[in-house]
Image 1 (cartoon, rainbow, N blue to C red):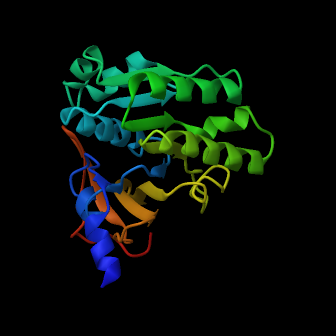
Image 2: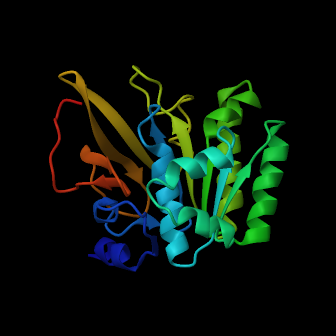
Length: 237
């Protein structure tokens, strides 16, 4: 009984993904860090920008840190789903920041200073896979992810860390530590069936809340990602 009561009282951040709040019993736990993983083309960037746009609609500020794509490319991709993204950027509700690939301390300083200056409530790092450019050993990468998480949580922010799922391997992440250093793990899949691909999502873990654990069908529609928590997918993924 006490666990159910805790479920009701925990603070949540809506995800902006239709169907996902239902699968998470209300949304991401507030001030958590979620590791979002998937193969290239699975929808990680769209998912993350939907999360920021959902906050912007409520007046919540959001930061998107990119180590890969230019801000212009990100905006041009996502305005196809939500034309208001440019408005959110122009009025300062969402900010896209390019992190130079110099060293980890510089990255940490950019994240901290931008968070302090903006007071963002939602944050994306795309992607933590690039930490391999700064460190040669796995434990240092894990330590860096935990340290970044602590910096973000200390500022009452809910974050998504994007990572890469190695294609064709039975692994969730590039290094095998990202999922253990995060509060939650959401995986996006593209499953080949009869010469076509079926999209799916699975919540691997989420601290402080109950959630669905099955593979959930996913579509990328004209207005972004939608999932169907009451539908069933193939059981042999």
